[in-house]
Length: 464
Image (cartoon, rainbow, N blue to C red; front, side):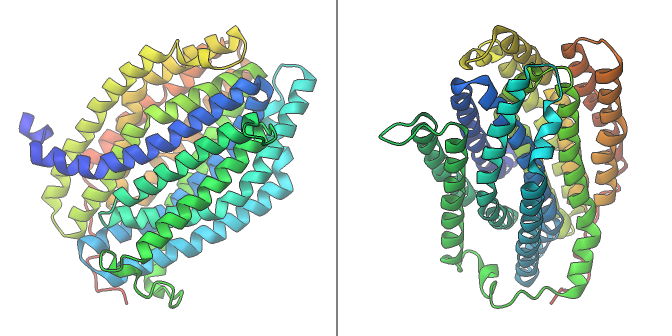
């Protein structure tokens, strides 16, 4: 029984070789976002609130990009498992084209409707002058951040393909350099050190944009100079041709993922808007919670990405029993690691909010929210593992129903009703809404148990 759910040393060595670089990259990135948030929080609650709302909108864009490359990524991992470099090259081109298209649309949307989108989060109780100031800082941060969207999108297309083909260290190194650049510039530009003006929220946005370009330069230059390691980049830009049959397959499999990620990210934004109805203090507390949560959640998120890569390779190679065994053991490993990480998050829940220059009430709310998310981390981890297992086999329609439909049909109506039509205390309301993840993980277990995801989507004739 133990051997069925627990692997040997070689198995965990293989898993960690894939998962740890992804984990480190995400942790570094989110840790700097955390420091960025703390620095802005030192300037004042109003600036922190404005930046938090702008980042909520940028988060939706980021998830749209992730969803856009995920569909092609399923094919990329399986093509690589089949050693079909032409197939990998074509999926890579598809990612680049789609990412640029989404970025252009997002920039146009934020320019034309940015103020209205930020204003949706400023309808809760609080001083009018604070709401006006938050809108100003949020708009300022968002408009500057638009410049960094293009390099971000390109890096995601590159990094996704590199990971699918076994290279997880380069994206991690590039992210580390970018993070250091971001951190140094944050210190200089937010507070006005070394003769630079004190720019506050605008300084944070400028630092982030510059770091995006640095990361993009490193990834593109290194990848295209090492064609012996990555033969699929040879001729990558000789044309932008992608076989029509492959495009149809990616769209058929990938559209549910794109729609899913977009709706899920939008759903999270709507959930936070429901919480914000109670007061502007809740917006600040949720922001404090989300920054530290993003750092600690890197463990289970990286495990999910590793499941998608390793299980996808086994499916692409036609080793279905190995795929089932790998998925089962990695799901257990992901859940177990989340219990440990959740315990650490509980331990620092009362200390972390003290780093912010804000009111004791907001700090207390943030502490309670952090503890709620820490307790529920195993459920989030299992849900994530089930999601990536289903996705590895191309069951994107199922993942759409499992993920975003659940948020919009269950979580959001619950939050909407409780926030507007009950006097339930905000912490209890937050727990009720976040706790719905437990039921979602049970549904995920049932779906994976049925084995409908065990499928090789590149077993047909080679795409040329």
